[in-house]
Image 1 (cartoon, rainbow, N blue to C red):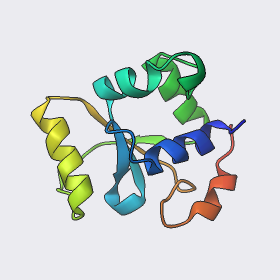
Image 2 (cartoon, one colour; image 1 turned 120 degrees about the horizontal axis):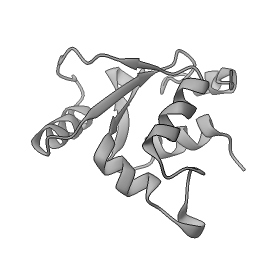
Image 3 (cartoon, rainbow, N blue to C red; image 1 turned 90 degrees about the vertical axis):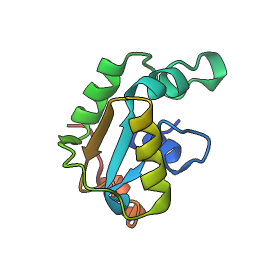
Image 4 (cartoon, rainbow, N blue to C red; image 1 turned 90 degrees about the horizontal axis):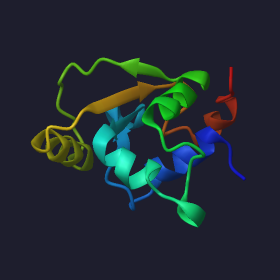
Length: 118
């Protein structure tokens, strides 16, 4: 089975989830908290992705793997998909969380193996 960063990579790269996407041109992960709880953490049985259903535990995992929370300075994304995801989340008044890890970058998938638990 895949480790946490690999699972995270798969869902960020997938078109199936509206609640999580690349931001900052592939350097950060953006998460629409409410939708993510429902769409990803709320999955049960064989469809379950992560072992937890709690947002708090999911964020603890991010921290254990060296992700840091970014303060969003409300710069608009240059890419259309990112911009549309941000717009949709803003319209729903959702809390968007941005997390950064230097080894988790869309342009450099080979860095993923450096993403280790602390």
